[in-house]
Image (cartoon, rainbow, N blue to C red; front, side, top):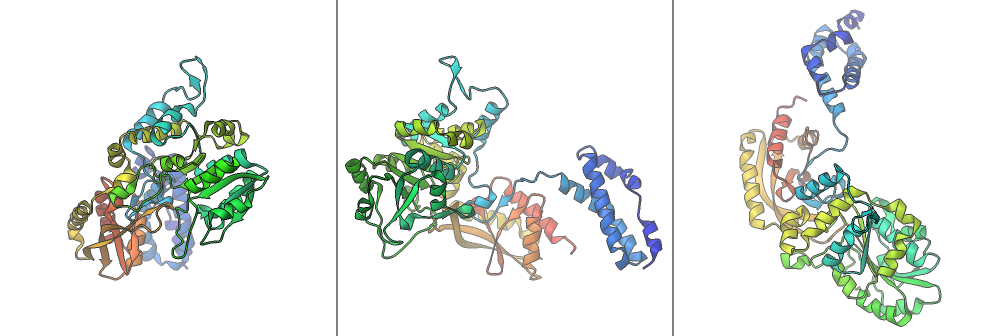
Length: 466
């Protein structure tokens, strides 16, 4: 190794004096630029023993660009937008349900000015933040009262803590599900202070199983809708209207955790039937809990609807303070729920529902247009339009396969792994599906402008020098 090579490394001050680096300071904090310079110089020092003078000069010719690239990377927000080309509509890893622009405007209006978050304008005194949602929830799904917390696990925990703390809660063994992040219904029940009483078997539970387990310690009957999996074959379960019979006979409240929280019957749009919140209430559930950011298509929230006597008790539970939502969630949820006052508005304006119900013919046309726009890359890629299947995602409708059209890409050099990585590392990351030695880009989950981002991403990827 030639120690004189170290003398060729530029000083930090000399790099800072470069015109491109000076211009960078208009948009990026000085500390980030300085950190990037030092990091790239340290990398070069660590590698210099592997280089001769010609190799070092080549590295130095690329140093400025590497510093610029690293500084821009360090200056990015950690939470960023991505292109979802996977076809999974409610993609938990990619943010679940998207929010309509009109909803964002409502959030912006409320958050950039003072609001009546906890102020009763009619009485001129302190009010409740939950009052802003009760009327629209009642109009959309029914129920005497409503309460919103930060997610559905919190909704179930708060409900059980209020209704059955220190008492037994009877639930079918086949409904003791695990949700995302390894959180399990039995563990949530344990934290609530309720005592789990399992009945039935994994595949079969009968009404008599519930009734035979009722005793003086019974605090509630719980039904958990298995929205994230299905048991098929030799099965039976007890529906809410059947549990309502026991409710009337023994004066025991019935709770249903619907999880995915669908508010309209999607079967009329060719999607498998999923029980709605209003149907559960009409069939006799005293309390129903569900998510805001799954099939409802709103912000992350846990929504509790049902009998006023129970909701009022929940509001006084100390856990409510820990689980409470802020003005952003309330503004977003109210605006989203208003769309449900007209089903056509809900289908057309809520992104999740619009993606789930889009016509197959439209998907085919969009995929053909995207493939045509990619024609210039034919030298490097085999580009085709293929039929495939999208998924609902988010632990909802696990068996549902939605027919779709995808643009498939197969690198002619065979380096599929590299292409996927380069698309993922694009300035706006492009997340795709890899299947059978091809990249699949499902147009169902692409938004306006995503096509251009994908084209630019491919340009950057295909000229990349490894």
